[in-house]
Amino acid sequence: MLRVPRSRGALSGVILVLLGLWGGLAAVAGPYFHFAFAPDKAWSFTSGRVWLEILPACALLVGGLILLVSANRATAAAGAWIAALGGAWFIVGGPLSLLWSATDRLGPPVGGTTRQVAEQLALLSGLGVVAVFFAAVALGRLAVVGVKDARLAEREAAYVKEAPTAEEPRPVREDRPGPIQATQPFPRRAGRAPVTPPEHEVPPPAERTVPRAAEPTDRRVAGGPAQEDTRTFRRPGEGA
Image (tube, rainbow, N blue to C red; front, side):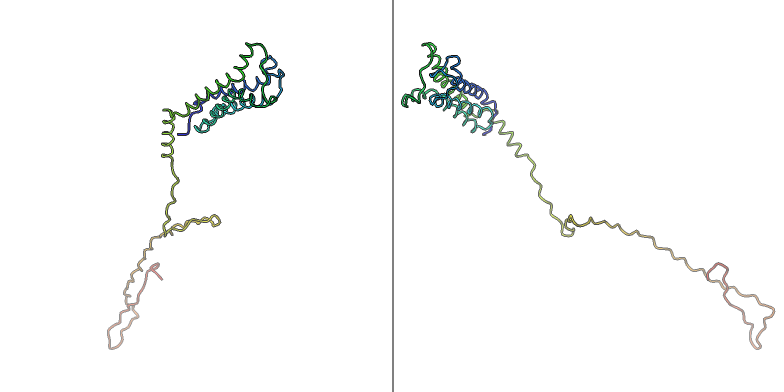
């Protein structure tokens, strides 16, 4: 809930920056138009001008710039407080300077009665009142949590909740090899050996027994039957 849109204090920041520029430049360049406090001399940095005009003008300028650029509620509120203190010093600085030594005070306003009243309002007390008012407006706007702030916080919370988280490493199975180191060559996956079908055994050719025809030269052994030739013959090309 600390985040706020920069437009929340933009208007007050711009006005405070302009008031700071006016208060600082009018203190040193006002004598050109005879619109200043004595001494009526431009770019004269006396102790009274530095402490009562330039210093609170710098506070308004810094506080307004912080309101313009900050998107944090606490930082923007700090800038508004700085500007409020600068505006308050514009108001009370003149009366308090009467307690200082004469060399550290502002001189009397230059010109007639009407011009002196205008110088008192435009350069000191009136400038301080306007600065305190816009600083208070900025503080009030920053102190309230608007509907836009609540919706912005809800969208950011939903985005953080739905943001993907880092995935946990998957457990490695024990039967698998570990990760390959960068210095080791990438292993080449060996394919399965091709399976060739078993060769069919060719049965040996059957042996045939061809009876040999009786030759006229065959003779019978006396006292016994004629013997028949039963030798085995193979056809050409049927085996060794």
